[in-house]
Image (cartoon, rainbow, N blue to C red; front, side, top):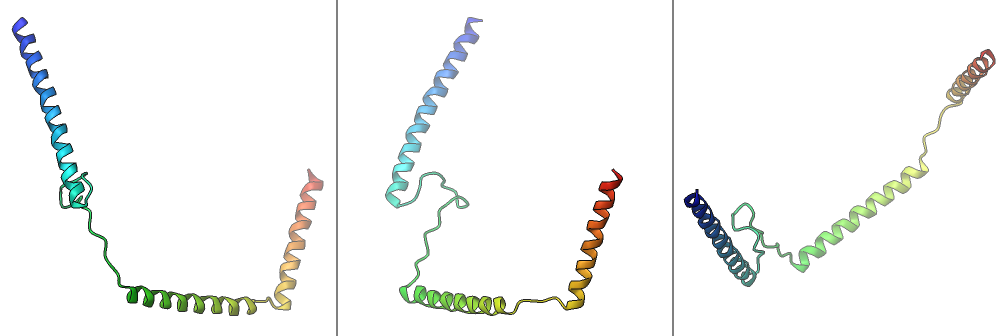
Amino acid sequence: MSNLSRILIDLQARRNQTQRELGHLDAAIAALHGLNGRSGKSTSRAGAIKPRRVMSAAARRKIAIAKKAWWANKSSNAALGASHKRTLSLSARRKIAAAQRARWARVRQEKKAA
């Protein structure tokens, strides 16, 4: 049994040493990534950080002008829509009012019956 416990202690010592070495390797990789301008979290292609795309000032200006035109068009359409309210015809309003009166009459009837 002492032989088995000695093997177990030896394996645990090797594991601890390997973990320390991995920690040193991770620190070295993170430092190298820091020099390269990337984060040291992942080295695979799937997790790699893509560099930001650069847009010229002229392109930003064109986009800004287009967006301002879009908002101007949208706000002018909204102003037109506010003045063109939909209205109900007189007969439709009378039908709705009659239906509402009938509903309230039913409520009053149920209240008296209860």
